[in-house]
Amino acid sequence: MVLPLAAPRSVPWLVVVLFAGALLVGLAFLGTGLLSLWRWRVLSRGDANQFRAGLDGLLEVTGPAAPTDESTPFTAAVSRTACLVCEIQAQKYETSQHGGSWNTIESRTTVRPFVVDSPVGDIRVEPDGANLVLDEEVVASVGRGEEATGHTAAFFDAVGVEHRAGSLDVGVTDIGYGSKYRVREARVDVGEDVYVAGHATTDDETVGGYGGPDAVVREQADRSVNQRLFGFPFVLGDGGEATIRRHFLRRGVGLTLAGLLFVGVPAGIGFLLV
Image (cartoon, rainbow, N blue to C red):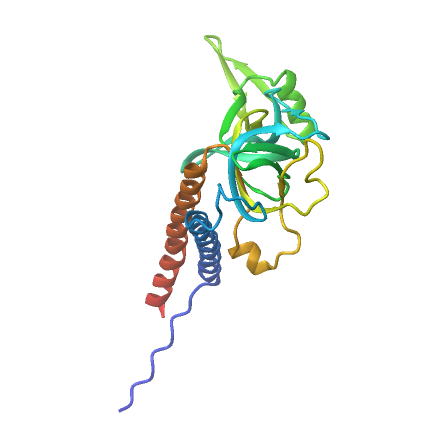
């Protein structure tokens, strides 16, 4: 007697979609994490020399940042600090069944070319396209039942953030309702010490002349995709060389582990269901 083959168990399409989504998220985390680990490795292996005589090629420099002759500092929208680079974020506190977290709902980045007074000379830096690794600080906050005022309100209006405030009188006290908001800034202030890694060149119209910089570092426009991903990165930070490297290491390890978790769990469950 021949027994019929067991029919394969059908898997609900929603489960398939969830597994596929988890795999895609995991692959994105894994790819970003491995790329961060690669950048940590590249910055750590000493390809660029901070104290060599020639300035063309890979370069790492540290020193105070100052405006160039043709550019002027700008004023950060909320802190009103004179700066050369500013990432500003409007964030809203959102809660769920798993707790609460601050989520960025709008962000803006403003940059100006500047000069780094380094041990190898004056290096002009054009920050467009750089990986920014800057210390962040909360420069304004609006609690429930509070109304944004002054520069904070102007920033919210400029970026289109809808915020409201109010209170409910329950006799004993007023209970604020609405949402909590805050503004975070990450800046390069005038005169602040910065770390810059990238490709430097002396063959540029901005270099030389009376009082001109000795070299310029900017994003290379003609790089291939492979060079952009795996070549020497263009990095700007205000925490020092060791801090920048630790940033890429921590970020890489964390995202890689998260990616392995997102990929491994659905793959393991899918294997058991087959």
